[in-house]
Image (cartoon, rainbow, N blue to C red; front, side, top):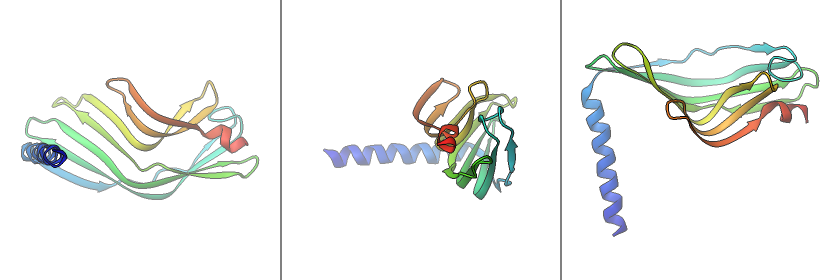
Length: 157
């Protein structure tokens, strides 16, 4: 019975992938440029000066454009962020490999934005907290499932 359920699920997944690709008109893959570094003065990200840099960036985007003009942009690959408390010199590395996905309608309007896996979405400057995140955030539906880690608290400990 388990084998039947597993094979049925696998067949459905394959048909979704093959079916989606059949309607795509183009698929482009490009490396994602390495941004930064960024200096956040005390009071803008944390209560102390923080430096954020990207020591590892092997991420790329895949843009799929469909016949109707709509598109899907996927970011995937390996990325590491490094955060440094410039007052104490304490440094922490974070997995920020994603992936993430944006979906646009034929008019170029963003319809869906999801971040999955490991992310570094930033934080609330009013609370002086920055977060590393592991899980799923769907900005379209408001679903947030996962674990947030307070970067500022760890860097000041």
